[in-house]
Structure formats: C-alpha cells, structure tokens
Length: 439
Image (cartoon, rainbow, N blue to C red):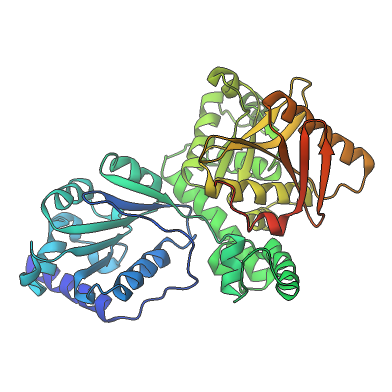
C-alpha cells in the first residue's frame, strides 16, 4: 500500500509542476511570509483561496524559482483518501524521491490546499517548518475544520492573511478597467457604469460573468453549503431549522441593530427551543466562517461595548439580494454593507458610534496611526430632513471625539459641508471603494 501511495503522490506532484496554472484575476492581497512560519490564507468559501495560491506560485516562478522547487498538493483529491492512514510524511518522502539532491540544499515552497483533510497535519507542518529548508502555504475550509481554525491551530507558527470576495478594484481589474483615482473623464464613466454591475453581481469570482438567474442559484447554494457544512453538520446542531431561521433573520436585517434577547425571543416565537447561549454560539460560528460580521458600539469600556446592541453585516451585498426577500433590505442597507466590507478589508476592528444624544454614526475605526475616522452611509442627501439628521449626528460625534473631518458615503453625490466641528466630506460610493483608508 505504501509503495502505491508514494507512486500516486509522485504522479500528483509532477502533474502539478507540469500543468497550467489558473491564476484568474490578480488579487490585491500581498501576503508577506516569514522564515519558520506558515502563511495561512483564511476566508469564506468560494472567495478564491485556491486561485490565490496559484497566483503566488506564478509569482515565485516569475521571480526565478524553479518549478521543481514548488510542491503543490490539494488534499481534497479523492485519490488521497488513504493518506491519513499512512501519514502526511509520505508527501515529503515522495517529493525527495523525485528530487533527492534538493534535500537540505535548496529551499522548497510547499503549497498545501485543504490541509485539514489529512489527520495529523498540525505536527507534520510544525516539524517541517523546524527541520526542512522550506516555506509553507496553507488553506482550508470544510465541515471538519474552517480556515480560521487552521490559523488558530498554527498559533505562534503561522501568519494569517484574510481573503475576501472581489473588491471593487479587483472587479474593475477583471473587466480591464484602470482602477486609479483621480480618473480621466472616460475612465470615470467606465468606473461608474461598472459600479452598477458590481452592485448587481457582488464579489464572488464564480458569479461575476453569469446572468441573474444562475447567479441567484449559485448564491443560494453558497448559503446552503455554509449553513449545513460550516455550521449545522460541523457542530452537530440538533435543531438545524433554528440556525436556518436565525441566519435568514440576520440577513434580512443586515445593517440593523440586534440583541441576543430579541433574537432568542424571535426564535422562540417560531417554536424553537434555543436558549440565549445557543443563539450566541450560532452567531459566533457564522462569524468564524467569514460569513456574517458583528459590529459593536464604540466605547472605552469593553463591558459597555459588549452589552449594547450590535449590528450585523454579510460577506457580500449581492448574496443578500439573492437569498433574502428584499422587503427589509433597501439600497441604503446594501450600500452600508458594501462600506463595511471595504473597511473590514483594511482594518480588523470596525465599530458604530452613538453620541451622548443617542444619535448613531454608522462606522468608526482607527487607521494605522491610531487616528479615529467617522463614516456615515446614506443613499442621498437630497431630502432636507435626511441631510439634517446625518450631518447632525456626525457633527456631534466630531465634537465629542475631537475630529475635524468626517465622511458621508452616498450613491452619487459629491460635496464638502462645513460644520462647527470642521468639514464633512460627501463622496460617491464608487469613489470610496477605490480609496485607501488606513494610511
């Protein structure tokens, strides 16, 4: 059996080295590695993690790394079903049978996709990082082990990098449109038109070139896969309908405030016997799967931030449109979801702000220098009452925090509004999505 597995592994390794690399649209993520630490890529299902590995392989080859020095294995390959019984050591054994002269002489770049499929992978990776001359890249996602948990298992021995569905910049790149800003008048028109497409299709790579009917079907299958494989099956949830109803409730109310008490009461009204601690677990597991995101109220007190109502957002705004009724989600909520994901790509912690007068500002975050920024999202400021409400909330927040500039993201409007605390910049969302916010 061992010889058969070694022969199969050698064949898989050589096939990968000789095959064409599907690199797709170049992602903007640059994951810097470090010696003796694995590079772990984490993110929601179907966001393009395996394609990113191919892009990294292509980058190494273009920089002069020999193809023979790259070891790629996708452990989801059904031919490797028996590998767990023999152990992951067979992978390196097969590689060095092919290239014995490289052992301890040349650096090997190991790309292990769906690593969680192999039992005992943690000690194997730990050992080769310590004993072999190699760089290691890992991805994973399944009902058995989420990619985020792979990073947790490798704590102290890994650097984790998040990959999201396509950003607007990456979406433009796929269409061959320059994403630079400021733009020429022609490019500005192309960018604006492309935003309408991005608004409809979202960022999952597989759906970008599809029609609406197929896109909706694919999105619905994504949701089912996340619900049943990443949540219900993985955690052996005894009342799966409660999870389905909870997730749909959260998606219908994306951008809105929630409390665990209210959600527990909602599920109980449907006849589910889900205690509050179970509801909290369901939400935490959905967040671990990079599917839903919770936003807390900004406060210097951790306790106060934790007990106040929270807001919920989804990994992709178009996914929301495909799987919800649309009754409670309007364009303003979708724009707000888009802004949140754009922020979350760049900073780990995003909050909402509540003024002393109980006025709400959608987002507050700190840049790399620790400077706070305030952002409000509103489809349009044409209505005088809306304009007054949004600017008053920002003005008061600016005064309380000592901030002289803030922002309102709209669908299409551009303006600078002077207020006693400073200036509120109004920009269209398609320009905002191309901005860097963490410098």
